[in-house]
Length: 256
Image (cartoon, rainbow, N blue to C red; front, side, top):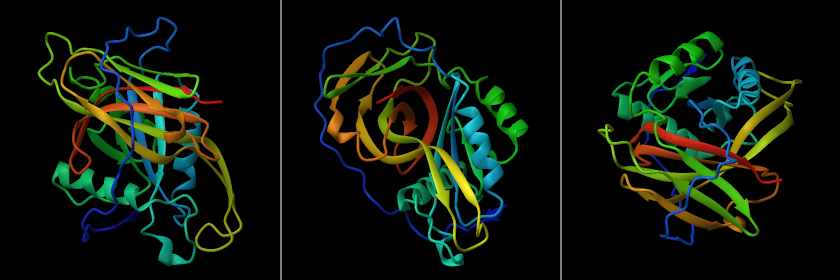
C-alpha cells in the first residue's frame, strides 16, 4: 500500500454544455434495481500493491447491486512508469475526500465507499463490510436515479427525496466509463505485467443540482461518449466537487 501526504491544492476544472429539461420524468419501469453502493478505487499502474484491488473492481462490476469505478491517480508517475489512464482530477478528488474526512489518509489502492468511508482497496472483506456499514445511514443511496440513452441524448432522472430524509440537496454528475481496458506495463514496479482495468472513468460532467424535488435532464450523447467509452454512470452526491460527501443515489447504463 502506498501513501501520499496532501501538500497541494486541488487542480483541474470540470465543465460541460448540457441541455436541461425541467419537465419531470417518471423512472423507467425497466430500469435496473437501484444499487446499494458506489465504490471508487484510487489506483495506479505504477503501484505494485494495486493489481489485486483492480481485480476486485472487475469482480464487483459483475454485481448489479454495486457500481465500481476506477480512478487512476498520477502522483506515482515519477517512479518510472507514467500511468496511461491517470487524470489529475482523480488525484484531486482523492485529496478532497481526505480533507472532508479531516485526515491525511491518501494512498493506493484506496477504496471510497458511498463517499462516506475509506478502506484498503485490495481487501474485499473490508469493502463488503463498509458497504453494509454505510447503508445504515438513511441518507446513503436512498434516492432513485435513472439513466438511459435515447437517440443522441442521455436522459437522467433523479427522484424526490423521501419525507423522512434530512438531506435534500446534492450535485448530479455523469461519468464516461470504459468497461475494460487492458494495459501492458513496460517499466516501474509492475514491469512486464499485463493488467486489465475495469470501469475506468474517462471524463466527468456536472449535470446540475438536486434540491430534493424530482428533476430530469437531457445531456447530448456527444458530451458523454468518446473513443473507448462504452458506459455511463450518474450519481447524486452531497457536498461539492471540492468537498464531496455521501452518495445519495446512482445508476449505470451501457452506451453500446
